[in-house]
Image (cartoon, rainbow, N blue to C red; front, side, top):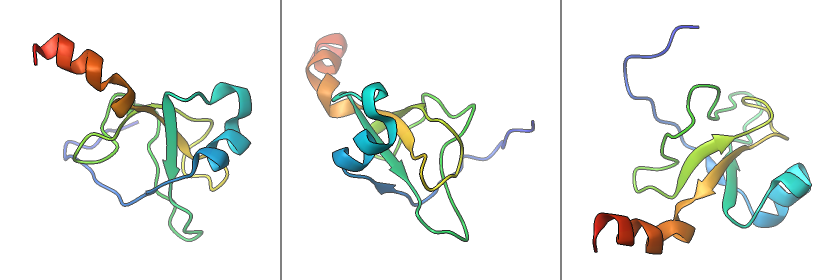
Length: 94
């Protein structure tokens, strides 16, 4: 697979905790959030090779995993950065 040499961006929506839990049940924890595009004609999502990438320009989540790419019933799962703010501040010395 060829990877883009240009930074990509997409507009996706953060889904409710309930939607994420319904889709992923026991795999989904309070440290995660999920997001995806619901447009049937043009689904946008993170995919293999994107792990570790930001969810938005202000880091809201870090790409973690998902069951498939660009499927309406399989939104991407992200690590919820806000849960780790105390640890981040400690590590960076602030």
